[in-house]
Structures are given as structure tokens and as C-alpha cells.
Image (cartoon, rainbow, N blue to C red; front, side):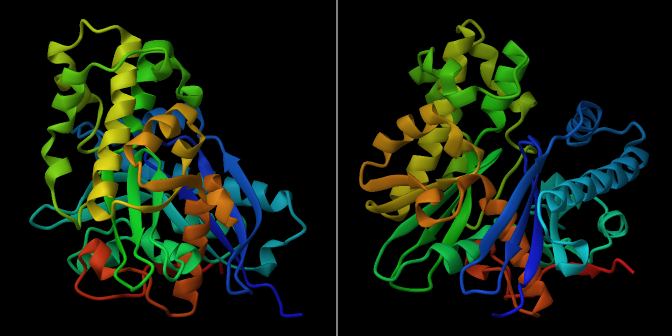
Length: 371
């Protein structure tokens, strides 16, 4: 029996709803999830990150430096707590693949950039495991968006010859991967808001971190005029490659959109925001192919009302979660970053230029030694 090839994946998305840590064995052709763990983000750290995601001038560099170390410590804690659930020791792990926490994603500027914090040196020291991190900036340096990176992983794990498949990841931002089944012409891009606006509005209105199962949205009624206005955002008309984040779809933008609709009942606003997510996703899926199989992953896969509303909008698709393909929907992105670490370790490229717009394929990330 071959020796296990263990890697750990660390992921915290735009929702900032926790740090996902996964232990994965890449010995076989398909990755095997050994264990998963979610580390809650302490409220003081969450507030600091949310503040940092908004443009400011007050001591921003010092705040960035402190949060970079603090997020690194939190990610390390997630790894140590993950391993405590298993019989696997730190010495058995080849490397940790850490996404970090995105605080700015601006790839379309004259000199585009993307910035993720969570000091990999701190993670390496605190866990005694080598860390591979900073996956996005090589792609940006090559003229790409630096996002999404998961389509290459989706292609390896979920593609099926002769079958059109769509992988939909719904985190704070939603992204899709188009797997045509009869070629390597994989496409992928961010469709727009996933959970970010609905999470923000339920938190602002009810003090809840998220709308569990979409129950609050289900109690409301979507306002067609408001939905049409939201869908008129120029991002939805952009051609791929494209990517987005909190820089575009955020509290300030939503408040601006609500200027003429603040009279609506709050649950009706929530319902409309949920339909914004569903319609923007469905519009892009149907443009790529009218029929196929759609597999959902990410936090949005757990929102029953979201899935119920999305399904009739993609009538030509059989809709399920990635769990039906053997990969738990909650852990797909974490596994993807373990996979990216594995690709780096073996000196293999991990970006898809057709997806990100980069000028060529590249080995992504840098290695930070524990010793």
C-alpha cells in the first residue's frame, strides 16, 4: 500500500463566515477527504477585516500588518484543531495550501492587483508545517484576473466525457465552471453576488449572521422593479474573463440601490436580493448551455430557498450538489486549495488561461518553510 500524500487546504471566502480547513490524501487519482474543520472568526477580528475591506486612510497600513499576523494565527489554529480530530501528525503533512483572506481584489486597474492576508510565515511557525500560499498574484502578473482558480480543480475532479456539467460555487461571490464534456475548453468566471448581500442585509436587519435555509427571504415577496434595477449593473453584461468581490457588490452599493426602494418591507428586500443571486447565476449558465447537469457547492448549497428558486430558472439542467459526485459541498473550496498546494509541490501549473485571461499557464504560489 502506497504512503499517503497528505496536504491541508485552508480557505476563508468573501463571506468571512469561518476558516475551512481540510485534510486531503492525494495518493489515488481522485482526492480523498480525510477530515474537515471550520474555525470561527472571532468577532473583533471579523470587524477588523470588514473595516479593512473598505477604503480608508486612517492608519490602514498598521491595521493591515496587525491583521495579517492575526489571520495567520487564526489559520494556524484551524490547522492544529483539524489535526486534533485525526490520527495524522504534522510531520506527515507535506504542505498546507492557504488561500488567505481577500481584502482587495482589483485586477482591472491599469496595474491590477489582488491582496490576500494571513501571513504564511506565521502559519508555518505555529503549525510546524510548510505552507504554500499567495496563489493568485502570479496569474495577475501574467495579465489574468487571478480568479477564479478552482475551475482547474473542478475539471480534474468533476469532468465527465460526453456530459455537459456546470459546477456552481456559491460563497460570498458566486462563480461557475463550465465543463463541456467533449473538449478541454473549460470556462469559468464570477457571476456576481452569492451570499454577500443577503448575509449583509439579514445581519443589518435582524442581527443574524445569515438567513438560515433562506427562511426570511421565503417570507417576503420579490419586487420586480427593484430586481430589474439590481440586474442592470454593468458587471452582469461583461464578457468573461471577469471576477468581482466586495469592492463592487457591497453595503455602499446596496444602500445606493435602495434609495428609491427603502419603503419596501425588509423581508421583500431580502427576497429580491436572493432573486438577484439566482437570476444573475441562471442568466450566465443558460448563455453557456441550455442543458446539462448542475452541481452546487459552497455555503449557498445549504440554502434551500436559494436552490428552490434557482432550479426552475435553469430548466434544462438536472440540479444537485457536489455531494452526489462524492465531494461534500461544504469542503470543495478547501480541498481545491489543498490540490493547489499539491500542484505547486509537484511543480505543475494550476491556472487555466481561458478562465482567468492570463497569458500562459503557471505554477502558482510560493513555499514558506517551517524551518
